[in-house]
Length: 77
Ligand SMILES: [Zn+2]
Image 1 (tube, protein in one colour):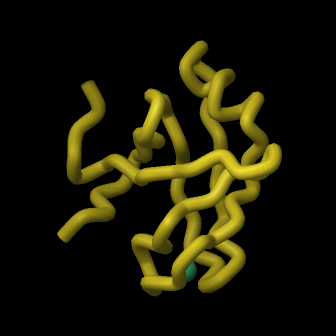
Image 2: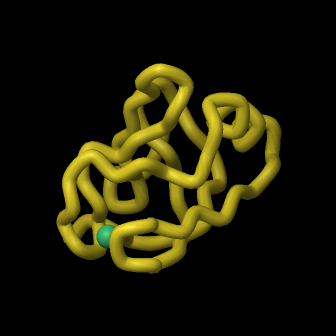
């Protein structure tokens, strides 16, 4: 179970990983610097640094489930 305040929703479209909305600046449909394979590999304990292309904010992805990426940052306020 992923804590709500550290969860980032994502979608995989045509082999790319998108966030419906950037948690920092509110930009919609943000292409994440992460491949679908990396959504899997974070489940096996690999960490992944994400840099948002819209505003250059960064967070680290620690885990994932079907719908959410677990990050190290409180992104829901
Ligand atoms: Zn942003």
